[in-house]
Amino acid sequence: ATRDVPEDKVASFEQFVKECNKRNINLICISSAMSPHRLSKENYSDVHTFFSELCQKNGVPYYDMTFAPSLSDRTDNDYLDWDGHMMGSLAQKQTRFLCDVLTSQEPENYFYKNYADLMSAMKITIPEIQ
Image 1 (cartoon, rainbow, N blue to C red):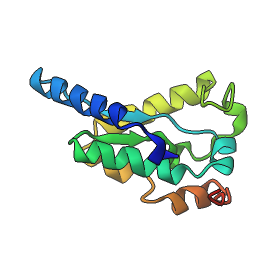
Image 2: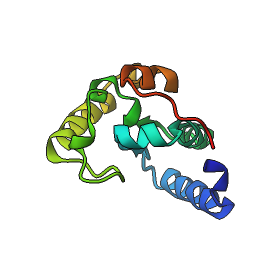
Image 3: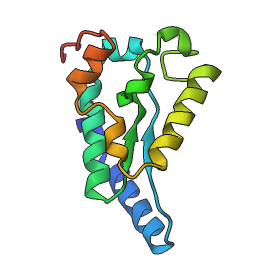
Image 4: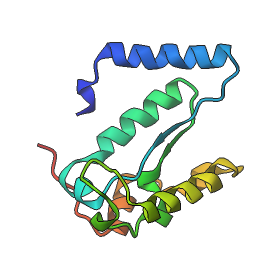
């Protein structure tokens, strides 16, 4: 999974961060909430860990909406496809949640602390790694 991310992609991200810093742009990274179907078929923990570590290493806040408790009641019917394209109501809910996170003094308190808690709350069995 994430071990397959080419080094040149990581280097491009790191260069982008440097450019933003030079221009006094406060960069943040966000992953949209994944569908229950995707979570039940793929081990999303590796993806989350990769982006969390990459962003932390580069001093960039990272908000993974998949880990948002207020979005854990989502169903596959909230998505147009398995790639994560949301229907309007879930997209609006995620946007409101993100606004709360971005205006908070403690945004880390808005998310599940780990993958197991997320999957338990969504009542999804953690898939075995192939």
